[in-house]
Structure formats: C-alpha cells, structure tokens
Length: 303
Image 1: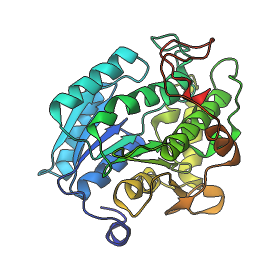
Image 2 (image 1 turned 90 degrees about the horizontal axis):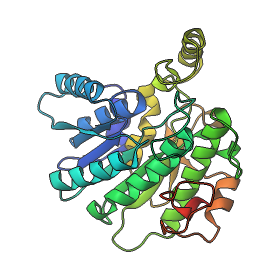
Image 3 (image 1 turned 90 degrees about the vertical axis):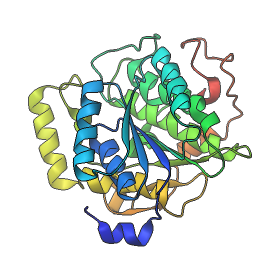
C-alpha cells in the first residue's frame, strides 16, 4: 500500500465500519475504497455499470482477500435508480458509517438526465443531493457524509450556462459545495458530519472519450499532461481518506496542500467566497419548493 507512513500518522482504524463509495469502480473512488479497506472497513461500491463494479470488486479482493466488498447499482442520472439504491442499502445495513460521494460527469455524452435536468448539474448536484437526503436515515452523529467537490467551484455562477461543458461543471460543483456548507451549518442533532473534499488535479477516467464528448486524441493528450504535472489518483484520494478516518470536524473543507491546491497531501482549507455567499442565503430543503425552470424533484436549497 502506497503512503503507508501517511496512513499510520494521520488516520484511525475503520475496523467494523461500513463505507459506501459512489463511482468506486475507477479513479479517485476506487483509490479511496482501497484506502478504506486498508483501514479495515467494509466497502460498498455504488456504480452505474455493474460489470465494471464487479471487475473493481475482484481487483480489490485480490489485494485484500479477507475484506468485505459489495456492489450496488446506482445511476445518479435517474431518480428512480437513486431511490431504489437507498431502499436496497437500507435492507442490507442498519447503519452506514461513511458515505463518500465520488461519482460525477464532465462533458457528458447525454445532455439531459432521465428526469429532464441538464446532465452535468443533474448528476453532480441534484442526483448527489437526492442521494444524500435518501441515505441520511441510515447515519447518525458518529458518521461522516463526504462530498467530492472541485477546485473549479470558485468559477461557478448562479446563472445556469447554455449547454454542457466546463461552465456547467463549475456550476455543478459550486452548487454542491454550497449545499455541503449549508448542510454543515444547519446540521441537526443526530445527523452525520458534512465534509467537502477536493482532490486537486489528477488523471482519472473523467476525461475518457467513452464517457465524454472529447475526441480520443484530446483525451490521450490530456491524460499525458495530467500524469506529468499533477499527482496520482492514489494521492488525490487521500483527501477523502482523511475526511473518513482523520481528525476533522463538521463543515471541514479538505484539499491538497500544494501550490494552488493542485496537488499534495491533505490539509484543511476554506470554501471559496462565492460558495460561502451562496450557502449563507436563506434556503429550504423542501422538495415542494422548486425553481420554475427545473425538474419538480430538484430541491430549492441551491436556488
């Protein structure tokens, strides 16, 4: 296991705990799942592609043969799938100790979710929020609800951009970060800690031509650049591992300590000014109060 000394110094055992990781079949989610298993947790890989989830499970069990690794079907672009996942996980476990929201899209192939929302925002924000609210009954004050945000949340705008792409991605992470901070501030007794992490910049499948509208050549060049000038997914995932097993508090924002937060070991950082402004607005979680221009299932908390 890489970074063993860091683990020994900065994390506690997760023995006996249950950790759910969305998007755990690849990239940062997979590396975070490895970290959780290394620390003794039982892990559930919540993934859209069941075959890839099964393959990831086999890879993890090959490294940790005595571990408990399960898979569950989850498509954040489909509210029915999210609700079915929440019902299924409630049948399997009485309590979820760690829930890592790591699944997301960037320049997606589709432009709408099954429920009519813009794809990037629908998955990265609304689907994640719906999932969070759905699994809250399985978590208590000893648990940790962890969200993977992004450095680019500071470039997100209140106004929804036309089409998908970078601006849509930045907005989706801006809204998600605002939700995490708002949730942390309004945290009720008995609810889990709400923690935001960002991995800096690293090469993952997020740029894959199979998942995005990028051309194969652009994807290859982009990955080559990222591998040369940023840190590896294993190191990028340490922010999530620290959020799950380190000494952190409710409302924490964790990112790499390197220059501009691009790479490095985790440390406590701050939400950007725009996110703090957004989270400070008087908002409601009621699913009945929605923005006129969005799906009826989108909570108004971020508007």
